[in-house]
Amino acid sequence: MCGIVAAVADRNIVPVLLEGLRKLEYRGYDSAGLALIDDSGLRRLRAVGRVAELTAQVDETHAAGNTGIAHTRWATHGVPCERNAHPHISGGLAVVHNGIIENHESLRSRLKDLAYVFTSDTDTEVVAHLIAHELKTESDLLAAVRRAVAQLQGAYAIAVVREADPSRLVVAREGAPLLLGLSGNGLYAASDASALVQVTRRMVYLENGDCAELTRDGYRIARVDGTPVERPESESQLSADAIELGNYRHYMQKEIFEQPVALANTLEMLGAARSIQPGIFGAESEELLRGVRQVLIIACGTSYHAGLVARYWLESIAGVACSVEVASEYRYRDSVADPRTLVVTISQSGETADTLAALHYAKSLGMHRTLCICNVPESSLVRENSLRFITRAGPEIGVASTKAFTTQLAALYLLTLVLAKVRDRLDAEQEAGELLAMRHLPMAVSMILELEPQIREWAECFSMKQHALFLGRGRHYPIAMEGALKLKEISYIHAEAYPAGELKHGPLALVDREMPVIAVAPNDVLLEKLKSNLQEVRARGGELWVFADADSEMKESDGIHVLHLPEHYGALSALLHVVPLQLLAYHVALVRGTDVDKPRNLAKSVTVE
Ligand code: G6P
Image (cartoon, rainbow, N blue to C red):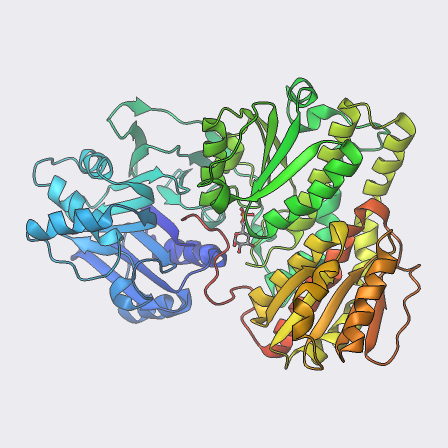
């Protein structure tokens, strides 16, 4: 979703802005733009499409300057077109914005009455005019921005430059991510650290309600009401290599193949231990987890699917009641709150607006035992939970989440074991056995990745299909859901997942020779029942593509294709069965020639509602 990069330095900052935008491309966008202050004043360039189009314009016009703001736009208000692309301008100042201004209509009509002329359909343009209006009675840019944002409702991260103030940059955040980058020869701001590691590792994360002024010599932060505040400086651990594509064709492919390392890193703290310490979730976790009566998991997208798998583990292994909610639904639902609930939020980015809002809502209902599982240590979500577990998947760039999902599952399995332990449901022998199984995960994933050539062959058969049905049972039903999500996200084939037992209650009507049916069929207690469901498909002429375990007695026959995973994985099999489905989606998308890492209409980090 929209990305911001801004800079004020003692050198030409245009290459930094463009490189920063390229690093933010993964968030999803449909147009890009920048504004600079150069010797002739304020200059703006905007382009629909890729950052490469904007770069071409920069090359053509030889644009250069020491102060500037840049933006990738993911359209919310107004179609993707140059007129709606950021920056937006008013009275010699330019603004870029990530978020949604909810009261933009009333502000727009007030500003129109004041004779401001609108040239776009965006909510952002009201911010530009509002600041320009405040500058009529307030000469200080930071103070004018504070007064303007005080009138906004909704979410925003903004960056502002002004022709009359060529060495100054002002930024503000509320509900959308923004950080400052500090270096000896300039100051920077961006939506995430990946845009700035090219110039500095020294970061300052702004809090909601912070506004900041940056000059070449330093910065100051103030709350919206003007109270000065200080925020700690931290050293970003992000490695520049981790966000390079290397020898891979796509980030998604790279990230699928990074899963063994991502899992090994995430589980590193286990070492060779035979027992697990509750402290892995935070210093006070043992006491906090001991009193838990139920678990409420809240997340979106792929992270939500991780929560659905965890429900099966938590109830069967830890014996704790668990419900799983889509964040955008939960935040607006009247629900019954129990203060002894452990609220678990799951998020790759830690910036998903609905997940953050749902957490705030849960807390407002009196539930203060909160734990997040997140891949970005500096994110908003991590700062807002009492307990946390950081998955160490490394930066995930592909919009379709892969390594974040499997590392989330590993974290959720650890949570299950810890809860089982504090509830006296795990003896020492079982505990050691479970930890051994977890340590085997990286190797198990590596062996599954070797199935890629066979999966590539299967993918050829899907490429002309319009629809696909995914089936699973028990904890593999959410894995079927995740497989369907992967396929639809990147190949644009309509895919649906059903618990196999529900087949005859509707979806069977869709089954014919044209409908491929993909079954997740591990060798567990539900296998015989699943086989009967698959017979129902076969009897209607449906073609089956079955992912089975090594020891399941599933045979290939006419219309039934079977791929055996290398082993039988027990309770952890859900984590492993998703890997071939990721590969399947990736190869189908390759055959169909879609934009694998940046599928149409989707964003990686959904920072607006
Ligand atoms: C977007 C991404 C998905 C992701 C979801 C939740 O839709 O495209 O890949 O699963 O957001 O994101 P989060 O960062 O909260 O896990």
